[in-house]
Structure formats: structure tokens, C-alpha cells
Image 1 (cartoon, rainbow, N blue to C red):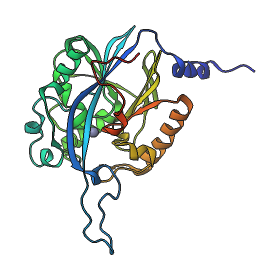
Image 2 (image 1 turned 45 degrees about the vertical axis):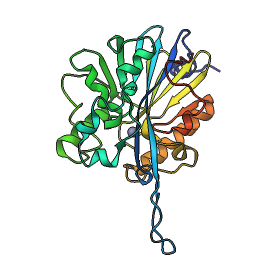
Image 3 (image 1 turned 60 degrees about the horizontal axis):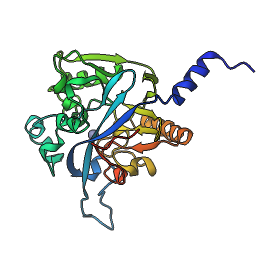
Amino acid sequence: MQVPTPIILSLCAYLIEPQGTKLWLLHVGNLECDEAWFKRGGGTSTLSNPNPARERRKLIMVSVLIEHPVDGLILFETGSGKDYPEIWGAPINDIFARVDYSEDQELDVQIKKTGHDIKNVKMVVIGHLHLDHAGGLEYFRNTGVPIYVHEKELKHAFYSVATKSDLGVYLPHYLTFDLTWVPFSGSFVEIAQGLNLHHAPGHTPGLCILQVNMPKTGTWVFTTDMYHVSENYEESVPQGWLAREHDDWVRSNQMIHMLQRRTGARMIFGHCAKALEGLKMAPHAYE
Ligand SMILES: [Zn+2]
């Protein structure tokens, strides 16, 4: 049987593992908030328990630096940026509070640990444009470094801020015209050999997860906030107050579970410290 060329090409995209690719997990901060933001029904009162204890959870912020043999240094997401509690202002910085901070968690310092300089980053890929993932774009103003993001996410972020329909999770601070925005569209894009973006709407309309095929450690999937913590993925618990399009989230959840089954991928969620246990942050490089 003859297999059509487009099918062969899309299969290849899943399988390519460019030799020489390295990957670092960058620890770019810690937040603390009420778990009902990211777990549906967290802390809900009932007739038998009208005043349940509120659960507060610590969330880790992670970016990923990839040294690619063809395309150079690629950064996936940027954390919150410098001095973000002041930039966010009240009440956001009280709801999503910065905790356990050290200067070591600044994006440029984390990249230094890998032996690289933030000035040598060749492209930035944003999974979604919420403030704790895109605030660090400020480092790339007037640099000409392309900022890849799904067309739907870019439009939604600017619209949400301009009309104030979802202002707070998106901020005008980094939605500026001195950044080199490069939108892409569709459900699947191979952004570089072995680096695949899958559109996974739900938490936001243009959210994309990143699949990285590594030569020695196999497939990694970085879900950004499609899943904040492991329970969102492992128990299919949707987000709480941070949920937006529920049916889209359910469809994306199915797609990602299938992707994981097909590839055996290691899953890294948007903010889950537990899922990172046993993994090493920069300067340790994965191959
Ligand atoms: Zn987040």
C-alpha cells in the first residue's frame, strides 16, 4: 500500500530527534495561591461542611532553554520578568503572591547557569501569554528576536487587555509593539527539527504545548498551563477560577493523553513542583 506523502511527513515530525540537542529546566520563581484557582471545586462548601479549610498551594515557575544543533538557542516561555510584584500591583500580587524569592531565579541569571547568555537566544516560543509566562518578554524589546506564538493567542491577549475583558491574567506591560511578534496558526507546527507545537485551547484560546524529541532522554512534553498541576492531567480535573473554555479544554485533554500514550513522553506541567521531583534544574543539561 502506498502511504501518502503528507502522512509520512507528519509521522517524521514526531520521530525526529536531532543529535546534539540539549535542554535545561530553568527555575524562574515561586508563587502561592488558593488552589481553587487551578483545581475545579477546591474548597467548595457543602451542607455538611459549610466552612471547609481553604487550601493554599505553592506553584513553581519554569522556563525551558533548548540548545538546538540547527536553530541555536530556543527559549520556551519567560516567567514573570523583573520586579513583577510591583508591575502586577494589587490585588494580583496578593492573590498570586511571590514567595521564596531569590535573585538566582531571574531569567537572565538562570540562563547564565547553562553557560549561555540571554543575548544569544535566537527565538522565543510562548505557550500562552498569561503574565507569569510572558512577563519576561521585556528582555527581548527592540532586539529583533522572533517571539513565536499562536495567532489566536496573540489576538486574544491584545483584545483582552484593550477591552479589559480579561485584564489581569494578561497585562499591557509585555504586549508591546517593540517585540518582534511572529504568529503561527493551525493545530500543529514543527517550529524546529524535533520541536513540535500542538494547539491545545481551553485554558486560553491559543495555548500550545511543546513536544521536544531528545536524542537520549526521549520525548518531553511541556504543557504550560493546559495543566497547572499533575492532578489536572492525571485525574482530568479542570481548572477552577482560571478555567475559560471548558469543552475546548476537554478536547485538548484527550489529544494530550493520546500524544503521551503514543510517544511515552515525560510530562512537565505549568507549575507543578511535585512533577519536577527527581529532575534536575539548570545547570544540569538533559540530552
Ligand atoms: Zn501560569
